Structure formats: structure tokens, C-alpha cells
Length: 622
Image (cartoon, rainbow, N blue to C red; front, side):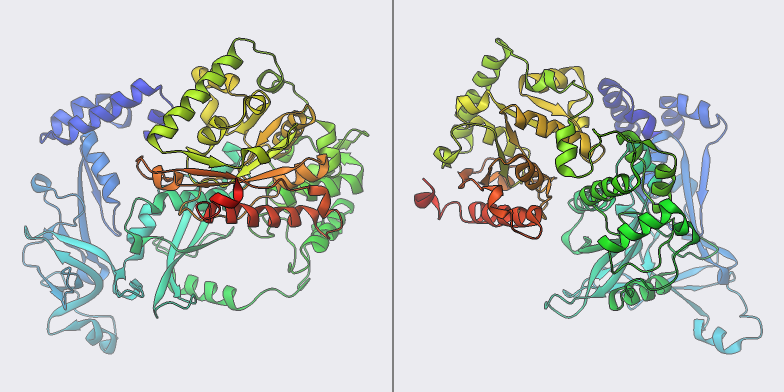
């Protein structure tokens, strides 16, 4: 339902949300059903009551169903209680609870903590007599007529029971707080990119207080990634986790994660085998596969397979036995850039070419072998390394309309807009900037700032000299510039809509085309906004462009935008400072064993100094 609503125009989405808000205030289910009569006619006009049991039901989904006009009741019980021991009354339904005890059943919360949470005990005629021929086990769970369920929960003042988790699954944090993994898993599973997720408590090895920190094991939804053409799996999962973390208290946030390709082990009732998962994670942390250990799949004995095997071994010598089902990123560690390099090396060895659209659909070794086996012979224009890829240039020319066209009316409009923004920023954010004179006198060059907020780009561009503004361009995330109005804004501001996570080669070629024509490119080397104001890992894209084209990179440090408008936070006024550093000459790193990595390391160091010590550097940077 929500997926179909999300595909509707903005006015329809606003209307739908307004209808849900109204429905939530209506006490009569019949009125709520009339409000969403189309949903009821589609699903079934006679369906009015829904029931859930066996495991905890997501309270948010229950609330949504209630808003649509469905009465959602929940029952709680165990095999040892002949199924149900409690149920939510139809006429007094309390969403988020499992209801009140059935007639003759008594509940007790044993050893409640400060929040009233303790183990749920049950007594009454619903209890079993015992386990078949196992008196010892029976005596362990039934004592003095009370069944010790092992579930944790509390009883509300109105008598409704709320289940919070299993006592054996509770994670104790260094600050003494108890965390219930099911609750956290439900929250993070909202992401459409996450298929499965298990939250574990792992030892705190960071030198802090004794206890456990929250670690997530994530299985990505590969169908979702394929449908969107996204290949940066771990990066997108981390981005989603960081955004969702902003919505919950700090003690419930995931502190580390690992992404795996295999499904999580579950019981026949689809519950996570937490003990088995915990053991697997402990073993993974303690051991690593021996280089080349095990026997590779027979698929790697073919001509193409053997070349892929050789390239993977050269790049990732620590990899164990190879299998066609291995994911290039999750199992082998190829990020978006090294993935392009792997494909380029394979094409060069085989003398064939995979077109970019087909390459973007390759996720596993088996799919890579299939694509290479069915590929056509290449020609001399096909790029084999980054230099040749950038020299080849983009096949389509739509980007020229955004970068190269003379717009005698629109350019002055853009300049005037930036100058107005600069004035507004000085008034609202007390914008202060230094080191503009360090910009190279003649383009091309690359501007690389840290990325803390949506404010970074507009504020930085607003203070650029006019001659630089006329030459300026950047690559923007496609989803932000898809509509007719946003496309027009992109043309005015020289923004080319291309998603590097989907079409990395195309994005790099467009960037190179602009730089070759004497333009100034803005790149955020972190790739996304910081979640905590600190520098994230840098991507090598800027270093590749600078080194292969022989153009300088200007590091830029921005301070204060995180406090003004952080990712996932509210907008507020806060002073902002921007500092330009000395240009980095990429050719000075030509003797480095890995020039791209050396340039990226230097860039990160310079930006870190500028961003962290902007105020202290004020006198020396001007």
C-alpha cells in the first residue's frame, strides 16, 4: 500500500497522510473503513478482523492497519500453555500489547527492574501437565504452579501485558542498560535495502567500560539493489543504518555492522537462531581464511573462469576457495572503483568488452563470467584502465547542455542568486571564509571539501570568484534532479544528474569531459554527509581524475554546517567558516606505489586539518 502511495504525485501523498491522521482520531472502525474503502474493496470488503500470534507483531504495522479500519488483535502464549494465555479484547484493543489474561489465567512479573520489566510467569488451567517423560525439565520451568516463560515484559496499569523480549537474548551495555534485540531489529528493518538483520552483543574492545556493544549482521535485499541498479551495497546499508539510528535513543543504536550474503539461520517457526549466529560471528572475528585455501569451483577451470580466478587471486590473495555465487563486494571486498578495475583487467586479458549497462547488473563472480563469455569482441576505443576509460569519454552528450552551453541570460541569474545567498549566509550564519586567493588562477581544477550538511555545496559555491562560478559544475544524485523544476535548476547551476553508485564509469567520464574543457569540478570525497560531523573514509575518485588528467586538487575545510543542519537533524542558525588550503599537485605522487591512494591520503589529511582547526588557522590561512 505504502509503495503505491509513494509512487503518486506529492498532492496525493499529502492527501493520503492527512486521511490517516484523521482516521487515527476516529474511534469507530466502521468510519475508518469508509475512509479507506478502496483498500478494503481491493483486499476484501468482508475482512474486518485480523489476529496475530506466535511472535511479536510490529506495533507500527498494527497501528497502520488500525488506521485503515482493520481491528488487529494479538494473542500471547507458548506451546506449554496450550497456545494462548492472553488476548487483546476486540472492543478495548491496545496496540503494542498482547492483551489481558484469559479467564482463569494469572500473570506475574518476577523481579521487575526500575522500568517494571521482568520475567513473565503464568498460572492457570491452560498450563501443560509436563514434558513427556521428562520430569526434570518440567520441574525447571514449572515451579509452585507457575510457568517460568523466559519472556520479559511488564503489565500496564489497565492490565494489558507488553512483551519486550527473551531473557536469554537481552544485551547488557557498558552503562548497565538492558537492550532487547527484537525491538531494535524491527526498527532497522524498515529499510527496503535490508532483507534480514540480527542484532548481537559483542565484547567492547574499544578500551571503554566492560560490557557489550550492539553489532548488526545484515543480509541485503539483492532484489531491491538490482531493481535500483545500486552496486555499492555496504555503503548503502551503512547509510540506511546511520539515518535510522537518528530516530532512536543513543543506547539503542547499532555501533558496528557486518554485511553477509548468506541467509541468517532460523528455526522452523522462522525465529532467528541467535546462539548459532553469535558463534558464527565470534568465529569470523577470530579467524580468517588462509590464502587460496580450499578447492575452487569447477566453473573456474574454463578459459574465462581461470582468468577471473587469476585476477581475483592477484587482487585479493587472502581469499579462500572461490565460488560463482560469491558477491563481488560482500564476499570479496571489491568496492565500486576496484570493481571497475577488475572488469577492465578482465576485458583487456580476453580482448572483449562489456557495455556499461550490462556491467552495472553484475554482482557475483558467476554473473561476471557469464557476461564475459557472452560479450562481443572489443575495439581499440574500449578503456582498459582509468586513463583509457577517461580518454574514451561518455557515449551520450546530454551533459554538454548542463556544462558547456552558453546561457547569456541564465548565467547572470545564477551569479546573482549565488551573491544573494552569500549575503544571506553572512547575516544568518555569520559566514566567514579565508584563502580564496589560493585557488589556481586558471581552471581546470577540483574543489574537495568535507561534507557535513546540505548547506556545504550552496555556501561554498556562493563565495567562489565570478570567473570560477562561470566555469563551475558538479555531478548530482539523480533522484534529487528528476522533476521538471529541479531539472531547470540543475541547468542554471551546471549540475549534471548522474548517480555514481549506479553508473560510476559514466560519472567519471562526464567529470573528466568537463575538466578537459577547462571547468572547475566540485567533489565531496566522502561521498555522503557525515553522520556525526567527523570525517568519513574518502573515495579515490577525485585522486583518479586529478592524477590521470594532471590537474590540481584544492582541499577545503568547512566548519559549522553540521551544527546548523546535520544529517537527520533540524535546521538552526550557527556560525560557519570555510577555509581553502594549498592546491595539491597530483604529479608529485607519480613515484608512489599507489598514486591514487597516496593522493587520497594527502587530501584527507589536509581537509582534516582545515576542518578541525579552521578557527585556529585563521591567521595563517589568509
